[in-house]
Length: 397
Length: 109
Image 1: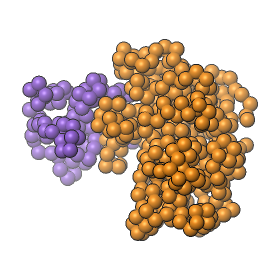
Image 2: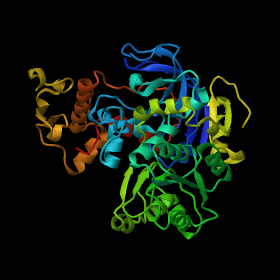
Image 3: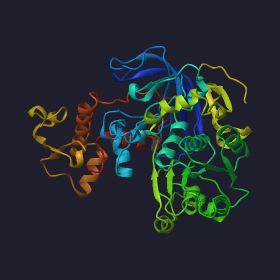
């Protein structure tokens, strides 16, 4: 089959690879209908996450049609249209039983790598390096989905393929942050990053009762999407002092809840950003935490901060004094999608959640390398480049 | 021990390990423990054993993890063979491959 592979730092290529096959009784094989780029892929692409191998098939956010079913699969049959959680979780271990699916004990066949790196292994993830299992990704004609009864969800009639695509990762990641941050009705929530995940976190926060939601970014097309499709306020960090403006809009308190949806390659201006870039390039720190620092500084006393942006290793100049003295609660997580995807699909079906607008550039899988370049460089207002393995392309919105 | 016997595949290690079971604190399930009877490699020998992939601790960790999966899920999750494109031979690629090959048996404990 055809697949888009990582071939080296900032290089991808469409190659012919073996078809996937059922390896466990709980697997299904999916014919991929749509598979999207995600901001977290850029960390893999740029070589910031070690343990990628040339030839690894990319893509972890996808939907498609079931074409083969393992002997122990109960919830799906051939022909089902499903969206699949990017994290691979057994549904049976202590963590899964508590809804903490991305922490699954059994979903990562290479647990030693993250066990040594972070002190404990987390679950597996499609196409997120060999440290998260070495599973082949979805930028391909077919993909194998392990633990399909847990991770694949039938898309209701009336929800389009494109809308369902983002119920795979962007939306449940946003929901993980909004829910995990402990939003209570009436809260003010600030979200750093107006990419797919940031937008979904903002909408999730609103549906969970937040009264005021402010999304921070620098790209006008993304901030326009926030206003138009999410219904949240926006803040351009290249035009305003973020912390002062957040204080201004909250009567001097700061946001009750801060959600960081940027991660290890944050962009900013000024000397601190230059410092972070140099340290990261010299590998003196693995991650650039610009947005994270700002969120700690902006958060109100006793407030809550949730880290959704992907970090891989060590950061520098973390404002520990602010965190401790302001009595902040800080949490983070990869997505627990198995817990949120059904309600997200329902929100989409009910017209309460817009996701299709994220697919600004839909193209054939053959155009994958061009799609990643556009997405990485934010060319032509690209929010997400989406691939159709069946070859059909639709014009950019 | 459940049904009075050591769970598979830990049982295949025979007398190499001492296996015990106890109820975990706070209702966090059951602790299945396996400890090498022979002394563990230490110092330079430890690093050499881990790098060579011939460390007895790696066999024990892998067996414990598989036993846990068989008990909780009923099967051991596989990833290979997985579809992939052309694998170029590079030093970093070789390092990732070696690390992944040992990853089922590596860990903190």
